[in-house]
Length: 462
Image (cartoon, rainbow, N blue to C red):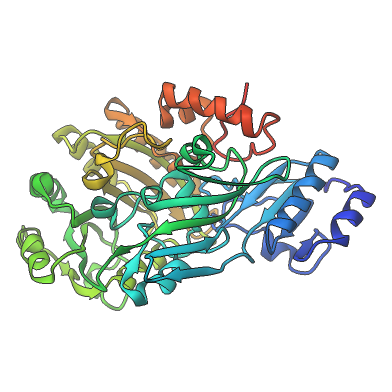
C-alpha cells in the first residue's frame, strides 16, 4: 500500500520545484523507480528529479516536514539498491549530468548525476581522465564517495585521490564547499565515507594524462588451466610497474562475435590487462602472460582507452538480478587460489562473472589516514558476483556466492564499502576499521545528527 503524502506539503514543494516530481500515479513512475539491480523492486512515494541545489534543498525540506525517508540516487548502481526506497522520497540527481573540462588547468567540474561514460567522453578527447570504474553506466557520485577503484588506479590512485573539492547540501539544506582548505574534516569524510554527511551536488577533479591508446584487453584460458594460470599470474604481477593494472575474471564464455563458437557456455579464466604507458613497453610487459599455457582467446592489444573503459558494459547491463559478497585478501596464496578454482567450477548462470582486482601501486602510497577510505595496503579485492536474467535460478546463484565468500573467510582482511550489500553495522565497521569508523561517527553527529541520510552504508550518529 502506498503511503499517503501530505497534500499541503507536496503543493508547497511543487510550487517552486524546477525539475520533475513523479508519483506512483504518474507516467514514467516505473521507469524512474528502476535501478541497475533488477532484483530491487521498491515503490517510493515521490521521486524528485532535481535540476540543481535549489531543487535538492526543497526536496529535503519536504522530507523533513513529512517525516518520509530519503534515498539519494546518482547513477542508481548501488548493489543493494539503496538509491531507491519504499514509501519515501527519492532525490534523483539524474538530470544533473553536466561535465565541464578545463584542459589547460587539467581540471573537470562534474555534476552529481553524471555517469562515468559522460565523464570519459568529456575528458578523453584532451588525452585526460579521472581514475574511475570499469562500467560506464556507473554513477560518478556513488563510485567516488566510496573511494573509486578502476583501470588506472595503480598509476594515478583512486578517484578520491584526484578529488580537489566538492559542493554539498546538508540535511538542513545548507550549501557548503569542502576541500583541503575549507571544511577539511568533511572533505576527509566524503573521500570514502559515502553519502552519510549530505548530498554532494558537484565534484571538482584533477585530471591525469591517459593514452589515448593503451595496451589492454583480456586473455582467456580453459578452466582446467586456472590453477596454473593463477599461480603464474601471482608471480608475474609481483614486481609489476604501476602502469599495469589487471583483473582476473572467471565466467562462462559468452556467445559474442569475437568468442569462438566452440567456447560458448564453457567455463574460462581470464586475465584482463590495462597498461597505461609506452605502447612498446606495455606489449613487452604483458607478453609473458599472453604466452603462458594455452590461451584460447587473446584480445590484449593496443586500443583506445575509451574503448577499454566500456568493455565490461555488456557483462553488467541494467535489469539483471545481481547479488554480491566481497572481501579483501592479502595475497593470492595457494589456499585462496584453490578455493577460487573449486567454487568457480560450480557456476551455473551464463551471466555470473566475478572480478578479482589487483590493488597496490599509487593506491598504497597515499597515507592510510589521509582519507576515510580503508584498505590501501590490501593485495586483492574479490567481488563475488552472481547474475541471472530474471528470478529464475537466482536463489541458487546467491547461495553459491555466500558459500564461496564463507570459504574465503579465513583470509579476509577488510572489505571495500562500495561492494557491500545490506550486511549490517559490523560489516560497515569492518570496511573502515574501528578508528576511522569512530571518527566518521563524530563527523556524522556534526553534519547529520538526526541520521536523515540513513539509506546508505550507514554510519549512525549515536
